[in-house]
Image 1 (cartoon, rainbow, N blue to C red):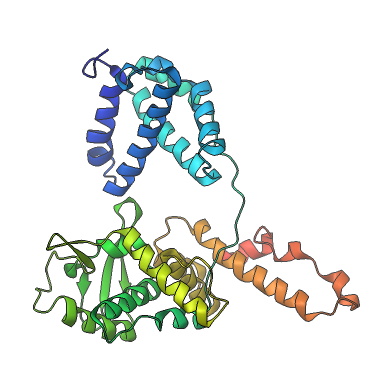
Image 2 (cartoon, rainbow, N blue to C red):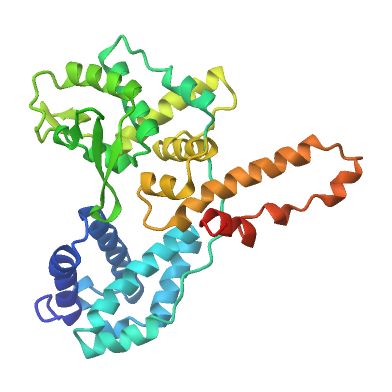
Length: 347
């Protein structure tokens, strides 16, 4: 069966070429994530059936096939629960769309919609102390051009809480200088949020601009951070940022053993959010600042801070003390109703 007449691939084309970009207004990053999920699932079906890609039909896809694929990526490919759930959600989203267009796809959707995401264990959020942050920021040699860039890049990640993709997508025109300098960040789902820049960061920003964008128009489409490829300016890749951040993390660890083994860009975001929360900034404001669509996503910082306090209390009380018997870890859990009511403003 050729690609032109295969209903499955016609639906896939409509989904990625029309529905997601035009109807849903999904961002390129979101569309690419969905494409990768579908592509790898179809490759699995093709390899399992030992057929050509274009020979895959809607009838070959059912709950049993999808269940086997999810088991495969967990056991054979070593994917975690979050990756497994993401792939499932992407595939389900496509077939939900396809069901509205085709009866065979509707039958497939009726089966696979019964598959639910696996329960994910709540992991404590990782973050660095302000002292550790300062040690890492002190590693680049700012008397050199690249050292100046690298220090500014990491300081920007910390001060703004930007995701690595948000950082490398910034263009000169996204920065507004006025009474208060502001940067527009384009986050998940093409959502834009404005983040004010503190005075210290603005000073470093001006120095960076003078070095790397001297004479540039403030409304320029040039990327704020860039690399040279074949003599041309290009958007810096996320992996490039990760590599340089990890490099300075390793250097800082030589000075202070409490620097984490794997310093990555998102760790700066977690650290800044935690420091804001610990300094008394209300959780809903931290949520808006991070660009979270749901307040529940931000609760990890409240949970981590509460757990830290619980451990501090336990450590402060000697083992032989009778007060030990009154300590109750569950009282400090984020599942505690009183805590939740306080966090949501009910008390």
